[in-house]
Amino acid sequence: MNAIDTAIRAAASSIALKGVTKSYDAAHQVIPPMDAEFRAGEFTVVLGPSGCGKSTLLQMIAGLERVSGGAIVIGGREVQNLEPKHRGCAMVFQNYALYPHMSVFDNVAYSLKVAGMPKPERIERVEAVARMLGLSELLARRPSQLSGGQRQRVAIGRAIVREPGVLLFDEPLSNLDAQLRHDMRLELADLHRRIGATTAFVTHDQVEAMTLADRILILNKGRIEQFDTPKAIYHRPASVFVAKFIGSPPMNVLPVTGDGSVLRLADGQVVVEAPLNGNFVLGIRPEDIVFGTGGPLKARLRYREDLGSHSVLAADLAGEVVRVATPFGVDIAEATDLSLSFPQARLHLFDAATGRALPGAIGAQ
Ligand SMILES: Nc1ncnc2c1ncn2[C@@H]1O[C@H](COP(=O)(O)OP(=O)(O)O)[C@@H](O)[C@H]1O
Ligand SMILES: [Mg+2]
Image (cartoon, rainbow, N blue to C red; front, side, top):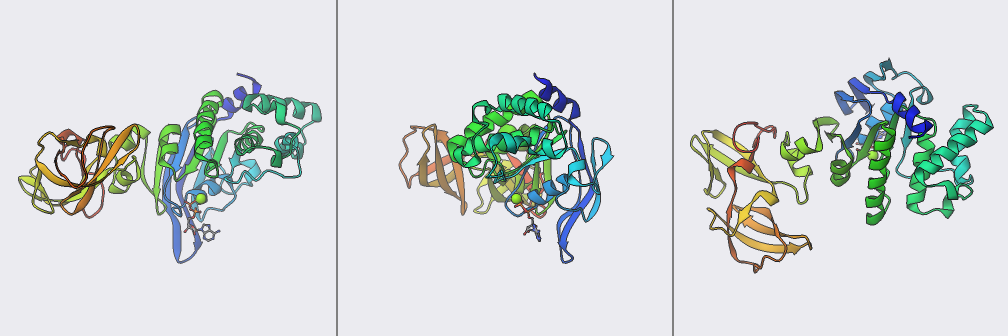
């Protein structure tokens, strides 16, 4: 730990959203009233599809967009009417927004200079941050002379040099190629472990969310679908939306009908005994389906994808496509009949009308 680590850890603040709303125009509320708390020192990922309001939320926290209603409390202080620079937040954007005509040193030092910090102190801080991020050899370069990953690190350096209590990231990895994204993910996780800043990280990438987050806030059209640990979100999705958003391939969902004793698929095949009446959505993850053991459900293999570590079979079942993950190398021809079984302990059940999970009805929840 160096002085900057210690200062940031000490400054780490919680962020509370209290009935926060946002409308850009009167006809359309992008964020309906939202209550949520991002805990001090935690890495919170805000996950959702494009256009669901992730950037809007982050910009309201940073102070780059005004709230239309409600309060934002950072470290116990109401900040929604404060200027961005007085909120104790630093933001890293998708395009990094580095100053192209300035050196790496000046990019990182800029906010300290604006804040009037004396030069010797500035140099000391920038050098400490550069050491932390592996930028010491690059301080004289311009952004155009850096790789994508190095630019990313400069943007992070610029954000943390002021020792903020809150770090905000808006899709910072989405312009990078797959290998670099992976490397940067590890670096970000490592940085977070070291500096312990309260972090809010926006992405539409569920792998980033699952691997980086202490807790994931899943957003759908401006509303919170679920806000919980990656493990809980994976194993106990609160809605069909979450179930279908998380996992690769995602959870299979099938319409089922209960007659008071069993749940049936659309073609009448019985999935499980349950004393339920009405229409439901049944969920099962591809890796939880057992096949080739004379299971009770009849399906037909449509195609397979071999991914090296495992294969994914896509099969027609009761008019739906169901994906089944199998170990790589299991030999099975296309267009053959499959026997599947759905272990009851792995089933998820959702209300057909609302899409919300029905915990305890059957199986996994
Ligand atoms: N400055 C703006 N003026 C009007 N509408 C906006 C503005 N910024 C975002 N929106 C709208 O708000 C919604 C959420 O946008 P955004 O927060 O950028 O979503 P995300 O970051 O999840 O992709 C979208 O429908 C978008 O078109
Ligand atoms: Mg966005």
